[in-house]
Image (cartoon, rainbow, N blue to C red; front, side):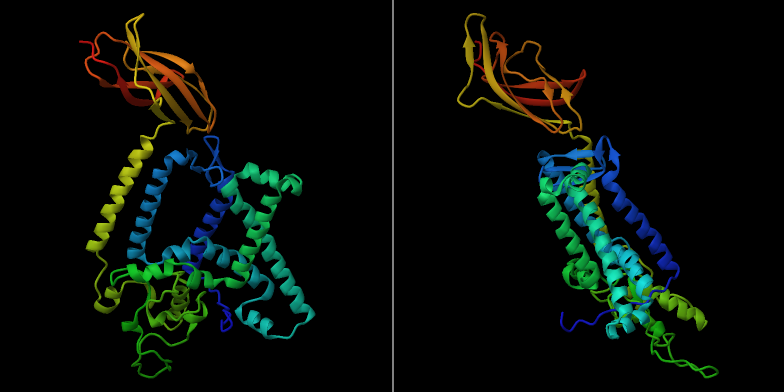
Amino acid sequence: MQNREWLYPRIIKGKLYKYRSAVSYFFLALLFAAPFIKLNGEQLILLNVLERKFVFFGVIFWPQDFYLFVLALLTFIVFIVLFTVVFGRVFCGWACPQTIFLEMVFRKIENWIEGDHVKQRKLDESPLTLEKASKKTLKHGLFLLISFFIANIFLAYFIGTSALTKIVTEPIAQHLSGFLSICIFTLVFYLVFSRMRELVCTVACPYGRLQGVLLDNQSIIVAYDYERGEPRGKKAKKEENHLGDCIDCKLCVHVCPTGIDIRQGTQMECINCTACIDACDMVMEKIDRPLRLIGFKSEDEIKYKKPFKLSKRIYGYSAVLLILMTVLGYLLLSRSDVKATILRASGTLYQLRDQDKTVSNLYTAELVNKTSADLKFEIQPDDPKATIQFIQKENELKYGGTVKITFFVVMPQQGIKKYKSDIGFKLLSAGKVIEHFNTTFIAPPND
């Protein structure tokens, strides 16, 4: 950190910058709005680790659905791998919250208060004056204010908007841990966007290192066409030009938010933000040369002029991704509203009832409500000859709640052909079957 060179990237508002701004503002609006959007009575996205409750697009997932979470995470990882193999680190430059907040919020505030990259450098190198102190105070005050706002939104994803509203509106003494969490997150976000900045992408984030493993000569990344640009050098008017198209203006370096020279080849620090493409296109246009000296290109396209084609590795990742998405989709669609677990009461086998010539088994059932509402329910056996006698009976499942029921299943001994047989139950709510579960029934065969 002591040898760190502070970066002052120049902002060029080219065509790709405008596209990236539109995409960034869309994601910012979605990021801030998602905790307050209700779907099926639930927050659009909630990751409440403390209560072990997760909500995605109005669908609630409880600890019983952990296998779905693992499968969804694995599917997402394979998608990221496939996307990186084809397009490199475009996610970092166009969709990563770190980049969006830094470039589209904090950087713009900095430019508004302190001026462009040249004025910022001069201001930092100048001695402390009233003007410098006022600008720095205003800038960092706004940074803290926005960081505080981001911290509140961030916390809403983990505790819910209703809990956050209580922390904000009620006395601090009643929600001391929540208030301290907001203060800690505010400080973290402030340090990230005011001091760490590009170090998050180049040092802390592991995705850049993953990129080096996944990329190949067919990957489409932001790249410099060295076959066309070299040898680089200044071009004088009315003189025969034996150089490449690159005039070595270094504008691509000046606009880079991580401070690299894209002309040195693919680098871990490149986040594919496309700022260098806009800068180079502006220069090419001025010297009347074709655009996209820097552009989305693969190594094979630059060196061998080969068009992009799908490789065996891409087909392999795509097949794995398709299988995972199919399995995940099936499990989500077949996911029941109630999780039912039925176990035979420990230490019991069966009970013969000589008075009515029946045999009974004792069971304990646990039901978990995975919906966003209370449920009235009843249990019915599939076999019309079977009856249920409840010892501990419940007929309502509270929202997110669990109930345990103990009951006997009674069957006429006549007609029983084997010691252990399967028996099924229907769980009904509002006249509809919402779950079906099975167990075994033990009874001596009736010879």
